[in-house]
Length: 187
View (tube, one colour):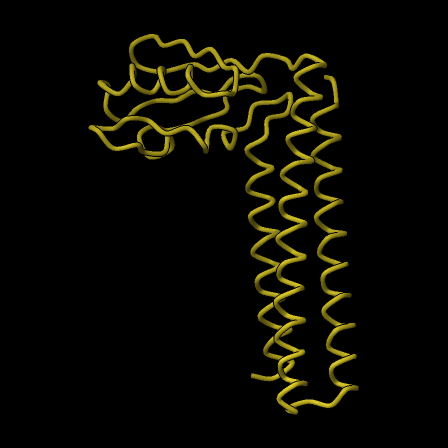
């Protein structure tokens, strides 16, 4: 393994962490309807916990409403129950064919809770990035110890890995700031 291999591997892992962060942020609700907030909901589909989007068509017909139209009419009850029992604070209504999920405006207190949750998620992802940096630095140190690279290469690799980590953490923080602004924005 070369220094380039270690750097490329670290970069790929950091990109995966960023992708996971974006996915996690899409599940944190803002004031407007977004079907991504329902990603964590699992419906009991014949004894198997199944993602909501695999048992129903999800749509956003208006900014404060999500609709779920189950493919199997017998799933209306379990879908409604799963949404109601989630920690999203949503109150679905069904008319026998379709489930309407109004997205209530967020209270200031709920906004603050969501921002705290967002900051917690962001910190978990920062820790993951630092762990990737540590792993890459240890791999470079091992190459130096095995005399596969010079001390100059070792220093350059550590600097490169640190810059990569700093850049990714900066992107992560910017994404978290944008999401925080969205959460705190009152329409």
